[in-house]
Image 1 (cartoon, one colour):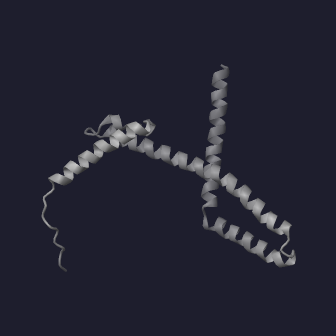
Image 2 (cartoon, rainbow, N blue to C red):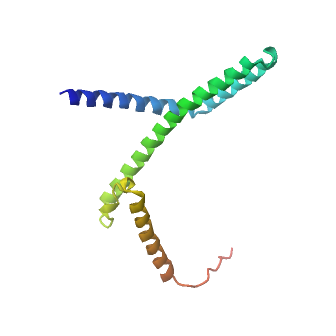
Image 3 (tube, helix red, strand yellow):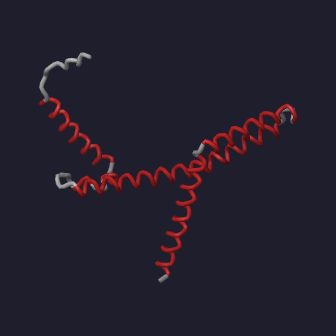
Length: 144
């Protein structure tokens, strides 16, 4: 019972963060967010002469940009992880739905680097074989 409660709570927390990250990423990737950030930089730069370009003036923008960058790294990584997972699931469904596709390709992103290297070599051999079977006629550009 406790295990299920923890799983439900963790799933809810994860779900809330996923929705938050998606909404914030969408907004922060907008033109308005870029213009807002640009306005903040312009206002900060305009305050420079008034504040005599003091160390405090420099530290304000430095600290703010460091904090924003630090938090954005996690939001961007979350969105990339979600996008990659969604793409992999879509590809898995396409592989599963194709009668001629090899089902061994499903979830290959979980293979080790050595296994992926071996699979890549296999496909490179297939490509080389296909290239060698193509006619060796020169391509003639179409005249207009």
